[in-house]
Length: 315
Image (cartoon, rainbow, N blue to C red; front, top):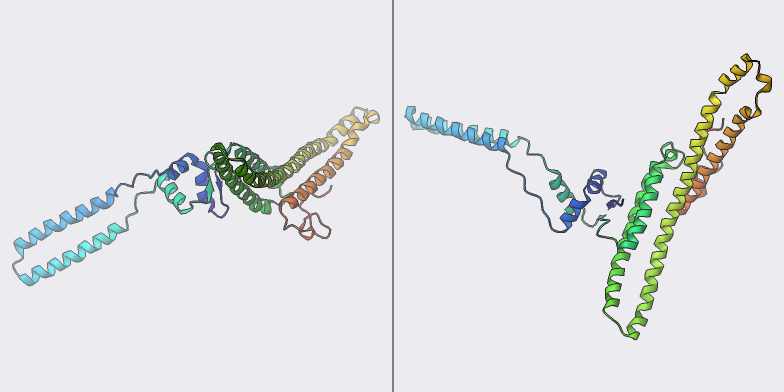
């Protein structure tokens, strides 16, 4: 299922808030505003209590203080007391902001830096966005990425950037395609149709370029999937190889060690082959990564000679 696409420069907490509340973002864009927060009842009560106490005390003073100087001094003291109570009340924490209010505030602040899957893309663009997000999600969630066999740091930076750039292009394509279709449906003369032909070719070329970027992501995800399968098989063979001593002990105790089938001994060979297959798969994934990131150079490649590799060491 498509999710909200957010500019990677938006803070992670806000980006997560946008992705979790796509429908509310749509309402904000349509003009909806949340209800204002109610007044702080504890703050109001403190002011009322302080005001009532001051009024009662003032009436008592009028009854017992005849000297004008004393009365003025006492009134000044009461004024200082009220100010002090007000300062204390001002430090009372405000009512917590609701999710709706926070989302509304952040959506207005970061307006134009998020795209809604249900509104900002036509059908064809939505399909490409689906493919983009599925490929990126698979790569970032893979075991080989979590284990550091891929360049997980660069993946976490570059792949969201790729998603945002592809989504922006798809949004522009959707908008121009809709305008173009509306213009065509309105009817046009042969001269206008001829003039529109270059624009149609420009749209087609742009769509092909975006499609190529999506397919590059999918190729990268495919190489990661190969590495995932090799890693699973490698782990299973290693688990079997760890049990070999028990089988060998059983064969020796039963006197059948001379008749042991050679296939058991081949587990080591199988493990070595899978180790190499895993290395080849990770190397292929690094090659696919370089197609996504033109800034990559052989010198920066973890598989290049002279640099340490993140692949598992050979046993």
